[in-house]
Image (tube, rainbow, N blue to C red; front, side, top):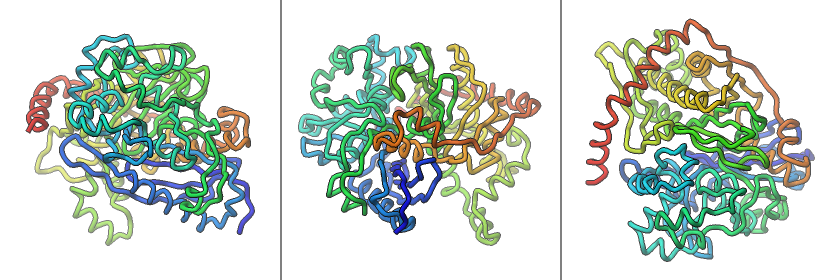
Length: 516
């Protein structure tokens, strides 16, 4: 076995689990992925089974150890990142009582509307606007009203992150990251917002939430014997508190300093920034104190469907492209990117809305859906692909427009995740937002971020900022073209108008379908 000191990051995304080993300077050693299913029983609903999570995590970990041939005793620490807000409910035995309700699940849209109507001061974290159906209080209220037997039987409500920390350490904790950004927890104002929960009809929720709220990177405990056996590791490895994948990704990009803007891409897009002072603004979420590092406030926006739309398009509507890709010995995305780049800005008249699972920000509207305008018989899959990519970039720019109005003016975007695999996509982001894109050497921000948290928990580095500085570096930059930006602005304005013109109509159709 190889003797190389390293740290382990476990990344749980929407589509599967990834185990990644890094050396203590942040250089990747191995990545191993194992998928798990996503269940969508009806429109707007999405669930997963925790036992399938664990099976994939263990397979990925065992593969990582086998492929790297690293001695497990060389692992100095580990941590995790997961989707957020993915809600699990159980009794004290931590055995889930039902499938986990995924972050992208919008079944609680009616409950979210009622919470927003409460007018409580806690709604400042929603920018004084609509409440997202993905947040834990909305989902808890939906369960209380629609599955009362499960709600009453449950003694514990928690996140996917907390479930995984328990599986690894046997400790029942909540990450301050998830609690702050999706539970209305405020470390500077007494913790859990008891009055808020009481106001919205969740008087008994606090007693079901984890009593111990832990900062990211803090040592929670050692890896248990059972978890070690399942994962092909050794007991006692220090396990640091984790958090939400995108926010852990901010650490993996070394964007924890005030003023940097990060864009975490994958199934969704998440723009995140750190600010020194509290700021609350309509159409922007936050700011959340101490959510990533102590002493700073985090602001965010979000697009619920981005990479997931691209994947849906590839799997559903690109049969002929797949055949072509097999003949050429390349991927479907290689062809789509190549052909889309040849097309003019605006995809020859196609404008898309990227709201396949609703809109997270700036509209916070769970009852809108995806749409294409301008399709003709002359259009090809490449046209639709370009329109999808452009719509995602417009959605990001709509969020940054709100950030600027709130007083945060980014000068560059640090990016990681799936979008980095496409130079076409990166260039589109740079041109639409008129900002340079910084691509780190390790584009898997959440995995590296988890490993960094593990390094802190294991005592390799004294704190998150020091570890992030030591374990990250920049690869290259993509610069915007002013002429292309100017051309994109016509379509960006039409994209914004598209929502305003059709939202009431979309609401009526979504409500009709949901209520059946």
